[in-house]
Each structure stands twice: as C-alpha cells, then as structure tokens.
Length: 116
Image 1 (cartoon, rainbow, N blue to C red):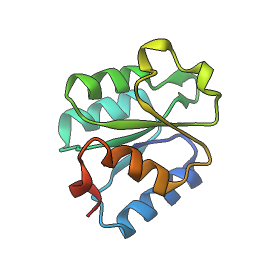
Image 2: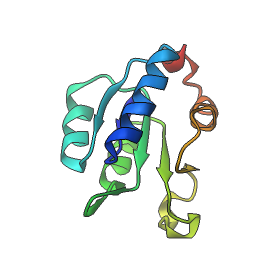
Image 3: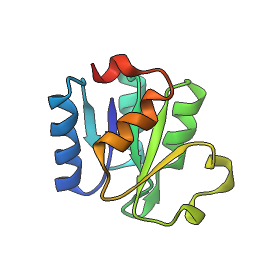
Image 4: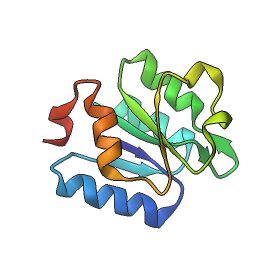
C-alpha cells in the first residue's frame, strides 16, 4: 500500500498502523514526483493520498493510479466541495484519518488481501 502524506508524524502513524495490520507499506512519500517514482518502481495494490502536499496537489498521482486500476482513497482536512468533480466517485476520508474508515473504503474495491 502506497502512503502519500506530507505531514511526517501523521504519515509515520499511518505507516505503523498499516504494518501492524499486516500490510506491506510503500513510502510514505511527501511529493507527487516521489509518489510517481514509487508507482512505477514498486508493486502497489492500494494507496492513501493526502490531497494537498506542500505547494502541490496529489491529483496527478490519483490519475496514474486510476489508469492502472489501483484503488485509492483521498485523506484530507479539506471540505468535500474542494475535491474536483472528476474525483467525486472516489472515497474521501477526512483528516485526521481513521484507519478503519480507510480500510473499509479500500476493501470495497476488493483488496482485502492488501491488509490481511
């Protein structure tokens, strides 16, 4: 599972919790460039994406994951109305995120194996 999050402590907490659940975590990374490199170089079966990464947005990463049919959820402190209309069909979890909510959102896309 790829974790894209620019807040170090939150990223590390999510990583630790996912590992405790048995997931293989790729990252966390804090930029679009780093996320794109991991997508191309690693086997990724799901992703958690913070929408705002410093001075950039994660949408190019979401587009690439969608092209590859890799399920993902957005994790953000922004209001749902902030998300562009082309992404309204994707799961959105408000930060601070609840790992159980993220897992349920991803499981709905039949990737239970990623967390088991």
